[in-house]
Length: 364
Image (cartoon, rainbow, N blue to C red):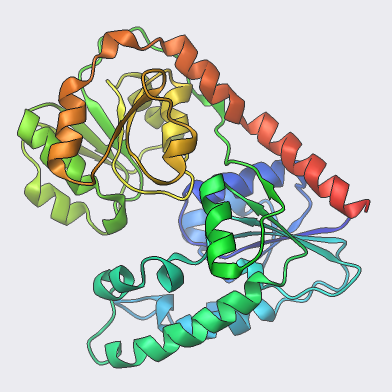
């Protein structure tokens, strides 16, 4: 079976890339089709694979928006890929990958991380926070309107859609008026983590530090309670966060997987203050036997079990989070029970589910 993968961008490493890596372990000979490949940043992960890029790579990435200057051309770029000689196109999509065009008998299966957020659910926030020069802002509404129409049409193209959570499945129905054919939650490689018996002295936040991640809540709650907090990961908001952080808050920057595993293993618990489509970092914390305090929305509702693997806080504000942290009783959690829960989302099971699902559709 000849397989093509479609992945929007290979420019930074995050949760979507961990999903891509798991899929590549199933089909290592597949060709990755991506709009832009930053070989300098991502070559160590993907140079061993076959990669095709779009014409966008030939365009200049001008500051402050980089390749986002060419946002209106992204649909044409994803549609430029040809898949006539493939049996299967497997896209994993947060925005444009689902718009890949295929013809019978090629089957297109989309693993959907989310309907495009800035077109459907956080448009106002996107226009407010994105690095858009003032002279461009007046033309952004018609561009987004064009992209929204294209996005809806593109979402009808895959033969089958796998949602990454029940949360996303509901949004696929709401925004694209079609049902997800399957739900397969993202995976965690539990073999990377161990349970530590060391004394736990700090809370942990992990991820790209962007506005919607709401790390500011964790920092301000830690300041309020005067407890230690480690913030792991880079991002555009790091400078802003260092300005509001007390001496009890430390920033590690981006860390390698081995070091990150140790940070998880030795934390009091993970703070997860954002609303995510699914959420891999809570599963990583659980794989290390550590509980999670999560905002009571989104994908966290599907993995955090109150009193067993963590707790929720109801409102996305400092007082609600600080209250949950203050009431937190570490002694009531069993690390082995938490780790066993994470094992239900192990990468081996994820790969088996994806493979079996694809096989069932190819053989139909």
